[in-house]
Length: 202
Image (cartoon, rainbow, N blue to C red; front, side):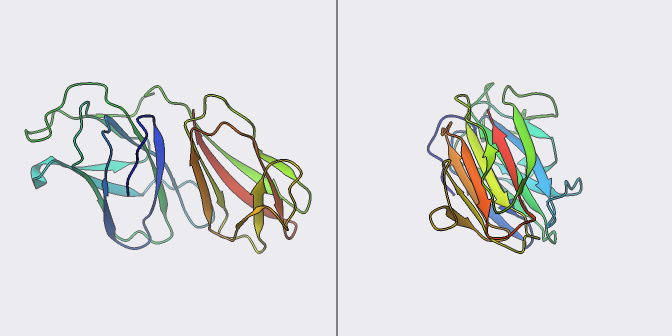
């Protein structure tokens, strides 16, 4: 998975099946910002291993709200995880904050405090009439909008005035993400009683 922007971005990971992925970005902060189950409920048990550099001695395990501050990073950051049924994790990747030698034993710091980026998560009920999913925000860095896996209908996203015939389709469990886009997004559904979760970094 490749990220081109020097600003903070959000990266979702499906933990249902064991796997690994490399981060191709000069990242100084890697933060575990959200973990939820198939019902969209917050889950505190999710964990992901982070390998910095080439050797296993740099392996660390992150859980929700934890982060690694590592400063000047190379393109040698690997995330790996065991199968964790029904869980989806979201990581925030942002620029460096301190010097860091990726080939030495890392002086990485595990933190849980504020890293200068505000993360907000909300649940939005969606029916057959248009609703505001997320308001315009000029300071937005990234946003993920995910249809709940329990939805029985289809949710459609777009600008105000959208209809089910022209909005972007989100079936149950599907998600939409964008970076450096401060626009407002509206939603409408093919049936009443649907919902989306919105995770924004600004």
